[in-house]
Amino acid sequence: MRALHRNRLPQIDGTQLLTDAGLETTLIFLEELDLPCFASYPLLGNSDGRQTLKSYFERHLAIAADYGTGFLLEAPTWRASRDWGAQLGHSPDDLARFNKRAIELLAEVRREAASVSPLVISGNIGPRGDGYQPDTAMSADEAQAFHAEQIGWFLDTEADMVSAFTISTVNEGVGIVRAAAEVGMPVVLSYTTETDGRLPDGTPLGEAFQRTDMLTGGAAAYFMVNCAHPDHFRSALESDAAWLRRIWGVRANASRLSHAELDEAEELDPGNPAELGRDYAQLKRILPNLRVYGGCCGTDHRHIEAMADCCCQCQAA
Image 1 (cartoon, rainbow, N blue to C red):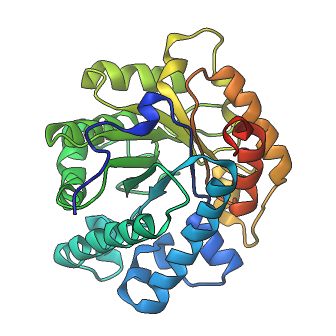
Image 2: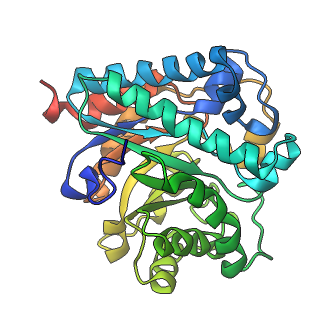
C-alpha cells in the first residue's frame, strides 16, 4: 500500500479536518491505563492495546462522519523516538517496528472508515526532551540528525505526512523541518506556549514561526499551536500579522493551568467542552487559514464534538 495524500495534502486545498483529542491524558485518566513516560506507543505491542487505540480513533471518526468533515489520523508515536524509547527499554530496531505498526494500525482504520473522507495519516513526532522544559543547548543540526531517524521510519509506510508537537525551541523546530524536507516528507510543526503566549524558552510565538520559515526556506506545509489553552496564546495573535496565515491548525488544552501546574496535577482538568468550542470559533475568526481542529491535554471526544459544532457546521450533511 502507498501513501494516498503525500503529494498533496487535502487541507492545503482548503478541506477542513477534525483530528483527535488528548490521547495520553484520555488513556491515563479516563481509561486508567499506566503509560510510563507518557508513552502510548507500547500499546501497539499486543492485541488488547491495539484495540484500545483503534476504539479511541473510531470514537473521533464518528464525529467527523456526523459533521461531514475529513479527519487527520495522528499516530500514537509522540514518544517513539530513540531517547524516550531507551528509557522504556526499547532499542532503535524495536522503535522502528513500533512506528511502522502505528501507521499500519491507522491504515487499517482508514480502510474501514468508509463514511469519512478524506482521511490523512500523520506520523507523530514529539520533542527530544520534555516539551515543558526547553533544551536550549541543542542546535538545529543536532535536532535534524536526531529526528531524521524517526522520520525515516515513516518513509516506507502509508504515512502522508509527519507532524511534530509540543516543540519548545526554534532550533528543534528548524531541525525537524529540515530533516523532513531532506527526504521529501510533508511536515507540520506545532509550537507550544506558556501562559504568556511565548515558547517555554521565552521566544514570542510570531517570532518563532517567522524564524523557522526564514531558516528552512518556508519548507513546513504549515504551522500549528498545541498544548496551551486558547487564553494563553490568543493575545499573541497580532492583528493582520502576515505569519497568522501560516497557522492552519490548533490542538489546545482543555485546562487553563500552566505547564508546571499540569505536570503536578493528580487529577484531570477537562475544562468546559462547550466553552472550548466557542474559543475555537473565535480563533477561526482570527486565523484566516485555520482548518485543522483537535485537542491536547485534558480533551476527549466531547471537546472535539464541541469544536465541530462551532466550526464545521457548514460542512454537515
